[in-house]
Length: 331
Ligand code: UT7
Image 1 (tube, rainbow, N blue to C red):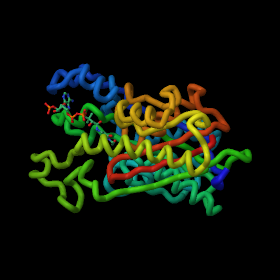
Image 2: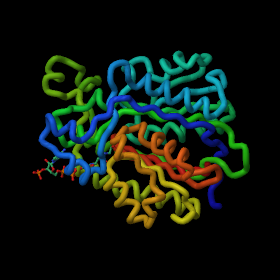
Image 3: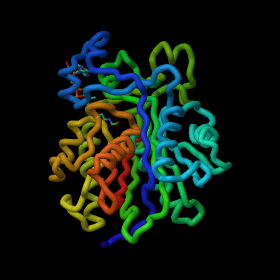
Image 4: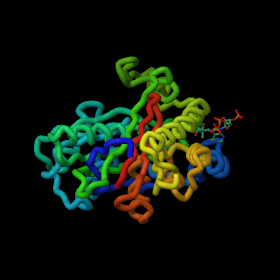
C-alpha cells in the first residue's frame, strides 16, 4: 500500500426522500418532452419533489436521525456538523445551525459547504482531516438538497434531471486496522463557473422583480459542455485514486458516482473496465439530487449488502464550480 490511511469510517448512514413522486409522464403534461427522450438520454424514470412542509432542513433532519440511530449514537455524541448544500434552508444562517438545534446537539461547530454536486465528498474529506487533528471524534456529514426550489420547470434542458433528497453519514474512528480513507482528491476549475449556475439572488445580482421575471434565480446549465467534463473527470478521478493506492478495478467492491446522468456513469465505467454491477445507480428513481446523490446511492448499496465492512469503495463527485472530488475508502 503506497498511501497512509486516515482511520475514520462511516458508523451510520441515513437518507430521506420527499413523499411526492414526479414521473416523466408528469412532465409530458406541460413540457415538450417525452418519457422516451428522458429515459434514453438520462436513465431517469422518476424523481422526488418536496411538497408542503418538506425542505432541505426537514430532509437533512430525517436522514441525520436515522444515521445516528444506525451508528448507535445520540446527538450529544456529535462534535461537528457539516451540511453540503446548494439549496440551503435559508441564505443565513447555515442549514447546519438549524440542524444542530433541531437535533438537540450541544453548541458544537456547524457549517454549510458549497461545492454543488461534489459537496458531500468535499465535506467528507474536510471531516476526516478535522478528525485527524484529534479535536473531533464524531462528525455528521450531510448532503441535502431541495433542487426543485431552484428548478425552472419551463427549461426542458435541465428540469427533467433534478430531484430532492438527503443523505447523512456519521463518521467516527475505525475499530480495526484497515477501515478509513486511503486517498482523496479535491479540485475546482472556476473557469467553468457559468456552465452550471444561478445567475441572480446573490451579491452579483440581488433578487429583484426583474430577476424573477427573467427567471435568473433558477439553475442554468450548458448540458453538452458539462456532459463532456463529467465523463472525462469521473474517469480521471477514479483511475487516479486506484493508481495512487495501487488497486485495480477488481479490488473495488463498489463505485459510488454522483448521479448526474446514467449515460455519463455508464460511459465512464465502460472506459474504466468496471462492470456496471459494481456501480451504484439510483438515478432512475431519484434523478440528480446534487450533494445528496452520493450518500443516497451509498446507503442503498450498503443496505443491499453490495458494500460491506472491509470493502474498497470509491466516492466520485463532479458538478458546478466546476468542482470534482473523490475519496477511496475501506468501509
Ligand atoms: O450534476 C451536475 C452535472 N450535470 C450533468 O452532468 C448533466 C450533463 N448533461 C446532460 O446530462 C445532458 O447534456 C442532458 C441530459 C442535459 C441533455 O442531453 P443531450 O443528449 O446532451 O441533449 P442536447 O442538449 O444536445 O439536446 C439535444 C436535443 C435538442 O434539440 P435539437 O436542438 O437537436 O432540436 C434539445 O433541444 O434534445 C432537445 N432536448 C429535449 N428534448 C426533449 C433537450 N432537452 C429535452 C427534453 N425533452 N427534456
